[in-house]
Structures are given as structure tokens and as C-alpha cells.
Image (cartoon, rainbow, N blue to C red; front, side, top):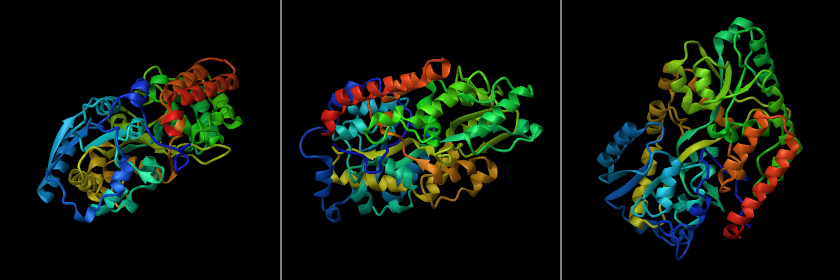
Amino acid sequence: MKKLSTGRALRGTAVFSLAALALTACGPDTSGESAEAETNDTDWSSVESADSIIFATNHPGGSQDIENELIEEFTDETGIEVEVITSGANYEETSQWFQTGGGSNADVIVLSDATWFPSYLNDALAPVDELLEAAEVDTSRFVTALYDDYLYEDAHYGAPYARSTPLFYYNADQYEELGLEVPTTWEEVAENGRALVEAGLTDSGFSFPSADSYVSWTAANLAWAYGGAWSEDWDFSAIASDGTVEALEFAQDGVGDWATVSSTTPDDDFGAGVTSQAIASTGSLVGILSVADFEVGTAFLPGGPAAEGETPTGGAGLMIASASSPEKQLAAAMFIGHMTQPENTARFSQATGYVPVNQDSDMSDVYAETPQFETAVEQLSRSRSQDNARVFLPGGDLELSQTLQAILTGDGDVREQLEALQTQLEELYESELASELD
């Protein structure tokens, strides 16, 4: 059985509603030798880059303008023309489009943490290690956890691009009024939330996400803090472990006391002043700052009895199609190198709110304008790739989110619900993945 070399896998933000399609539909190239074998057989020193490539993107984070600027500069520098295809409105649509043959001519594709693995299973993605080396891209400067989200069987299948993590947000005006300190643990989050509610400053001291607001993404931090997880590689017993049970019992007990479950999204609740503390994407910072009529504070995600606050990775990367010719693959690798240069990463980050994927990026201008963003970048040192159950198991995110929603909004026995979830995840693995990974 294949296992992730990193022990855990990224991510992201999708629900695999088309699980069977993802694993059985014909992708751009699902026959013949594996993409890895074909790439390893290529003498890249004898390959000349193509003079044009096709870039398929959903313009994550409203990035169309900055993408176009960077692409124009790439063409000016290299002479390589880049045709841009808007491949969907979101990551899920782009993934479906690519897997079902719509992207048969695409050379570079934007795929998210939770949508790239089915394309790997279909042999539709080329390993990028040798390609990026041939294009003289220094991958050692990528943020390690973000790059290793695409590491499988000792090869990377993408480069980080539009990346984000969750961030802890708090109402700094209310904190100052009560003399509260920034929490470093979940217990302190609860203490602050309770104090804010009891003081009459808010009706909600913290807002948990609902099932359709990526609760399994942000709540991974809570599970890890208590020594739990959604899975360990392909072992799903961690979901019903003592650590995970303790973490979710803590959250369940908090709802109705110091916390609520959002009816919209935690970032909407927080920006509107409906809740005083929330965990939301770093990509939500710009939007929150634009609507909040109070001082917005940001902090690292809280820790717990088993670990300091670890943050799950998220967002999308740039992948290269295995069906592309070596000449186009080399040009695609050059394009990836351009898009992830330190200066260009900083510009992309400033325009979109995504975190910089290159460690050498100078973010001083961004920090001067938005000092809260520095917290997001500094927190990358605590980033951790997501568990397989959420991002690699078709249907896993949906099952996780529905169970978490039931736990947070009900009073059912947490251990029993997690044991049932473990069984569901194991059945999904056997029906959807086991034969593919043998």
C-alpha cells in the first residue's frame, strides 16, 4: 500500500461530491507508462522549451489582474506565450473540468489541496522535481510544508501557489476593555470567550464553522492540539482516539456557553461584530478589515495539552500535465519558476491575501500597510499538512464535516459518533481507494 512520504497530506477546501468520477473518469492521459517513469527517462539538457503553453486557472482569490500582469512579464522575459483558460469558478470545477477531458490541452493547472490527488491517480500529473531543476527553479526556498503537500512516493506533483492557512482573529477593542491577553491555548480561548459574554460585550465569544464552511479544515488544529487527528496516513483509528474525543467534547461543551456555530461563516460573523473571536482563513483578512468597525487582532492558532498551535495548510498549487510534450513541460516549469519568484510571490500575496510561498519574499510593504498579515506569515513555521482523511479520501471531507456539525449542534455521545465516522471512512477507503493504491 502506498503511503504519503510526509505522513500527512494537504489542503484544502473541497468536498468530493464526485468521488466516483474523480477516480474513474478518463483524464488527459491515463494509459501507457506512468508519468513519473516518462519524466525520469527524459534528458532535459537536450530539450528546448516550447514557445507557447496553456495555463488553466480559476483565478483564486480574485487574482485575474495580477495573474495577467505576471504572465505578460513572463512572456516579455522569455518569449513564451501563455494562453489563459478560465477553467471554472472554483477549485472543484477546475478539477472536474481537468479530469473529464476539458483540460486535454492544458499544460499548467491550478489544483487545490483536496482536488489534485484524483488527477495523480489517473496519471494525469507529471512529477515536477526534475522539471523544476531543469528550469533552474530553486525549490529549497519554497516554504517546506507548502511544497511537501504535493509529495507522494518520493516525488512532488506540484508547486505551491495560492496558499492560505487558518488564522485566529479577535476583537482587540473588547480585549482591551476587559484587559484580556491573547490566548495561546484553547482553554484560554474559552476563558476569554466566557468573559466577553458575561461582560455583555457579545452574545458569542467564539464562532465555530458550520459543515459547509470548512469545519474539518479549521477544526484540525483543535484535534491536533489534544493529540488527536482525522487520520494517520491511511489509518483512520485516530478519528476515534482519546485525543480527538477530548477535543470535540471540549468544543461541544463550549457551544451555548462561550461559543456558537455560525449560520453563515465565522469570518462574516466576526467582521460584522456578531462574535468576538473566530478562526478563519488568512485569505479572509482583507475582507474582514474592510467591514469591521473595530480594531482587528490576529494571533497564532491556539494549542492544547498535546501540542502548540499547529495550523493546517490550504489553498492551491501549480501542476504540470503529464500529457504535455517535454518541450511544453519545460516551458511550464519555467512559468512556475516565474510565478513563484520571491518578488512575484510578494506581489501576488499583496494582491490576494494569500501567504507568500517563497521564503525569500520581502513582505515589508505588505506589513506596513496591513500589520496583521505578518502574523499569518510568521505562523507558517507552525504549518502542518492536512490528514489524508480530509484531502485524499473521496467523500472524506463531507463525512467529517457532517459529523462535526452534528457534534457541535447536538448533545449526542461524541465517542460513539466518532467511532461511527471511523467505520464510514474505512468503508470509503476500501470502496474508493484501496485498489487504486495497492
